[in-house]
Length: 279
Ligand code: C2E
Ligand code: CA
Ligand code: CA
Ligand code: CA
Image 1 (cartoon, rainbow, N blue to C red):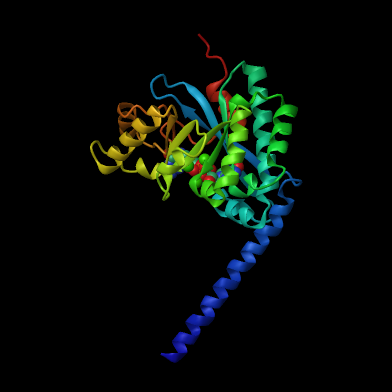
Image 2: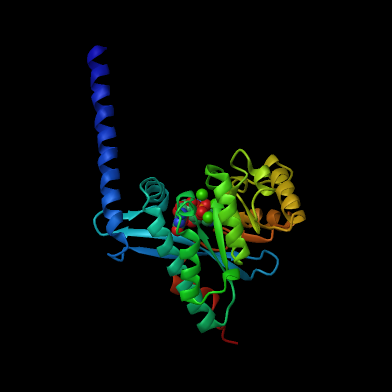
């Protein structure tokens, strides 16, 4: 009926308004998050499936807002990308990740890799290269221990500029990983356009992985292509031992997923992976 339709319209308007309000609040609180000390990083282990040894970690941001509670990066990162705050957040993430890595190198004489996520808007910032160099220099981190993860959409947003920035990062020694690989539209052509060191096959391929399934065939093809091109192939989102067995058969180089570990706070990761075992 007409009345119903009208009600639905105003409900719809109300929910858009609520969304706008929430976004505005998140936006507003996020501006204060760095100085209010509300951000932290967690680190998810990346493991060699043959030796079961830690080869690196991915730094993932967490935001505990005093006003709004725990907010997922899936919610606030896209907002920060839209409003430009991702540039400042990204520098904070890199600094924090480098400082953690330095601590691990000093305290545990360990030389694992640190991966950080980098958005298109960060690469587009004219100060990006200079600031990255500065952060690594101040933290005394050898760039070869840093991997920057970019997604396909990042790369195609502004291909010429992205390629040029990535080439300079790569010449500086930083490793480049193509994240969520296989989900976009131009994955294969990106392989010949970008100076990559690893491919991270998207976790949707491992969700319900079975031998000889389509997912299995796709992973197998990506692994063979990636290896032939000299890239490390990372399997993301591996959750079960059965999936891990298949990933071993498929000869992926690195596994990141709940089967080994969820992302961990710095001290929890140290306790699980670095403290010497009593013999
Ligand atoms: P991503 O880069 O693809 O990161 C992997 C996500 O998959 C993480 O979610 C991780 O916790 C989750 N994950 C890992 N293993 C498994 C598994 O076995 N099963 C399942 N179901 N999930 C798994 P998280 O931490 O919520 O991050 C979500 C996204 O937010 C990231 O996806 C990334 O796109 C973005 N993000 C997180 N931190 C940062 C950051 O510092 N900078 C930027 N630009 N983006 C970030
Ligand atoms: Ca990532
Ligand atoms: Ca991913
Ligand atoms: Ca992603």
